[in-house]
Amino acid sequence: MDAVLRPLLVLFGTVALTAVIGWAIDRALHAADTRHPDTRLWGLLRRCRAPVQLLLASVTMRVAYTAFNLDLRRNDIVLTMLASVAIFSAAWLTIRAAGAVAENSLAHYEARTTDLARVRQFRTQLAMIRRVITGVLALVAVAVSMLLLFPGLRTLGASMLASAGVIGIIAGVAAQSMLSNLFAGLQIAFGDSVKIGDTVVVDGEWGTVEEMSLAFLTVRIWDDRRLTMPVSYFNSKPYENWSRGGNQITGTVFFHLDYATPVPALRERLRKFLLTRKDWDGRHWGLVVTDTTPTTLQVRASMSARNADDAWTIRCAVREELIAWLREHHPYALPRVPTSPAAVAPEAARALPAQAAPGRPAEAARREEDAKAGEDAKAGEDAKAAEETGGR
View (cartoon, rainbow, N blue to C red):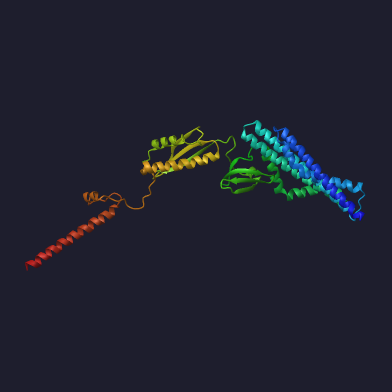
C-alpha cells in the first residue's frame, strides 16, 4: 500500500506546489505591470507561466524521486523522461522570455520614432532573430536530450562528430535550397530591400508583406489572398517596392478620347475635383496628352497620395468623375468606333443627287445614279409605245 500511496502523494504534492508557485509568480508580474505602466515587459512575461510551471514540476519531481526514495519498475525511463521534459520546458521558457523582450523593445522603439520605415525594418529584424533563436534552442534541446540522456546514442554522436566534415558536405549539397533561403532571409532581415509592412508588386500581384520567416515570405494581396514565396526570390528576381524611400506615391489614370476633347477644360475639372478629396496629399497633380492614335488621344491624369491605398482610391475616383463629366457636358469627346455609314439628311441627299453622300462609297452612288437613269429611259420608251398604239 505504501508503494502506491507515496508516489501518488509526491505526484499530487508536486503538482499543487508548482501550481501555487506559478500563481504567485503571475500575481507578482501583474503587480509589477500595474506599478510600471511605462513598460510592457512585466505584462508580456506573464506568458511564461505555463513553461515555468512545467519546468518547476519536472525539476521538483526529479528531486523528489531521489529525496523520497521512490522505487518504481522503470526508474531509469521515468528519470530520463523527467529530465527531457525539464530540458524542453527550459527551452520553451527561454523562447517565451526572448519574445517578451523583443516585443517590449519594439514597443519602446515605436514610441520614440515616427519613421515608419525604420520601425518596419526593426520589426523584421526582431522577427528573424526570434525565429533563429527558436530554431537553435529547439535543435539544442533535441540534441541534449538524445545525446546526453540516452547513453546508447553517445557513441553514435561521437562517431558522427568524427566524420562531421563529410556529413557537412553531404548535408550542404542536399539542403542547398533550404540553406539558400536561410541566408537570403537573414540578408533581407538585416538589409533594407523589403520589410514587414512594405507594399510590393510581385509577379503582377499588388499587396503588403505580412509575414517573413527564414524560408518563406507571405504577401497579403489587396483581395485578402495570401501569396507565399521563397525568400530567395527577392534576392534573385526584380520586384517593385512602393514603400522604399517613403510611403508617398503618384497615381496615374489614362483616357482614350476623341480629338475634339477640350483638354484645358478637362484639366480644370481635375483640379477642382482633387481639391475636394481628402486622399490627395496636395503635393502635385497634372493632366497632359501623352500619345495619339489615328482615332483617339491618350490623356494621362496624375495625382499624388500619401500611400498606396490612397493612391488606388483616388485613381478610381478620378476615373469615374472625369468620365461622368465628359459624358454629361462633352459627349462628343468620348471615343467613337464607326461600324456603319453615317446617316445623311434628306435635304442633303436631294441637293446632291449625283454625288456620293458623306459616309457612302462613291462607287455605290454611281451605281444608284445609273440605275435611276435606266429606269427613266425605260419609262420614256413605255410612254412612246403607248402613244403609237393609241394612234393606230
